[in-house]
Image 1 (spheres, helix red, strand yellow):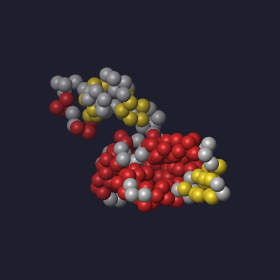
Image 2 (tube, one colour):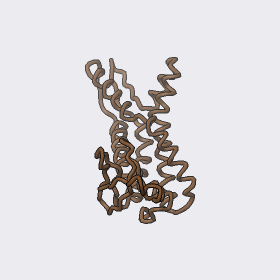
Image 3 (tube, rainbow, N blue to C red):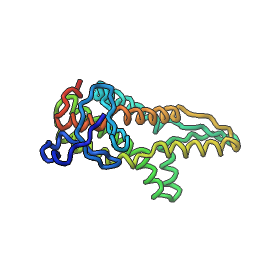
Image 4 (tube, rainbow, N blue to C red):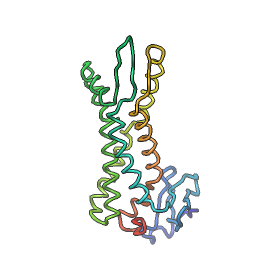
Length: 219
């Protein structure tokens, strides 16, 4: 539901009235849409954005839920391993410490950053951005933090770490008595919550709200 802009009238349009496709770079007039409508590029069909209902409230609820899941996901046992009468419990944090103590400090730092530090920083940035919109306070800092968040998105790799955990569990299942811990359930719930948050927190609406163009985003 987008119309490409006429090149002859393009200079007369204000920059706020234009939008560019991220895939094919088509510059077009920004269409007016209501809640639930999706805006697509007329050239390549790429989804530019979807106008979602109560995006700030729903995103805030998901951010808070993710922050509550963060501590048990990282510090509760992921699995219990019973081998020859000896039982060990492994957590994400103990895995980082184990790598560091075994002489692989570089790998330990990378695992810590990608599985613990960056995901937490992303959630804190999202929380600060949403609060700045909700409370209508410090939107300049909100813009800065939202830019930082977008730079951090490629560094949070919880899904890769989850795949590593699952592969390790499959290999250890034949060697020892293996049982799942509550930490694994919290970790999966944290990953799913973050994915849901990425879908709910519409970038187009957040940028508009931070710039003051969409006052309804606070509702």
